[in-house]
Structures are given as C-alpha cells and as structure tokens.
Image (cartoon, rainbow, N blue to C red; front, side):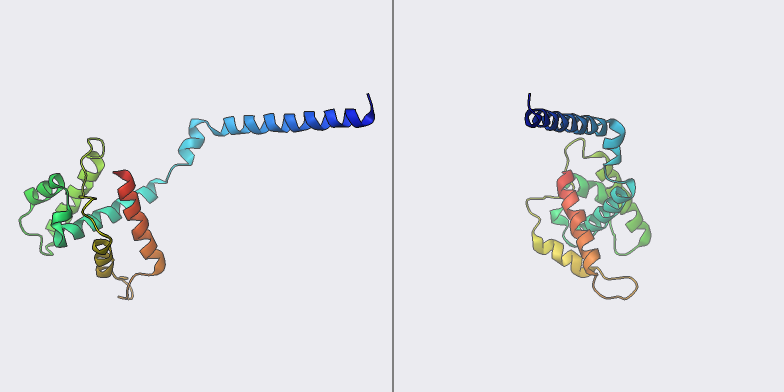
Length: 156
C-alpha cells in the first residue's frame, strides 16, 4: 500500500469518527433536561398570558361579538356592567385567565378566529399607549403585542 492510499484511508477514518462523534453529541442533546431547557421560559409564557387577557378584555368591552360564546357566557355570568369599575375588571380578567388555562384541553376557543380581522387588532393597538410618555407604543412593544397575538392563534 502506498503512502497516498494510506493517507486516504486515514482521512476517511477521521471523517467517519468525527461523524460518529457528532451523532453521539446530538443524541446526548436529545435528553429530557435539554428539551425542557429549550422550551419557552415561564416568564415569557406569563407575559403572553397577560397580553392575551388584556386583548380579550378589550374585545369584551368593544367587540364582544368576536368572543367565543363559552367565554362570553362566563364573563357575563359574573358581571352585568364592566364600565371601568376596577373590581369588575379584576373579576373579568380572572375569568379570562381561568378560561385560557383550562379550555385549551377541551378545544373551546376564546375568540371566533375566523371572524377576527387585522383591522380589529389594529384598533386594539390604537387604544394602547405608553404609560410613561402617553405616546403610542414603541416598535418593540408593538412587536410584542403582535407576537402575543400570534401565540394565541398558535395555541388554539
């Protein structure tokens, strides 16, 4: 065997060994702890949940025909008048939160997604303002709201 042939065999063996090492590394990364580590953080989930609650509260106050009948019935059961009375707002958010936490498994939807139009979401964004400056939301906050809506669609 010539040096050239021996060198080619060695290079082939080296590539094969590297490939096997990469395969083993991939398998090690597929354990449960790493998979859980790659999921969204609870703080992110909590922030999205809070955004969902605020959006659904807006829909209840301004566009209640877009809410799913099950959610609407639960909200109306606890309050007849929601006009900026903090206790009713708090109760309503609580009902929305509990609906979102449990109804996903049953398949009930909080919103009539087929009827929701982009203009409805834009109207919602127009009602929001920066609490410090009173101006419209920054680009980052606007993006967070859109991401939250995307996650609500994805969840259902």
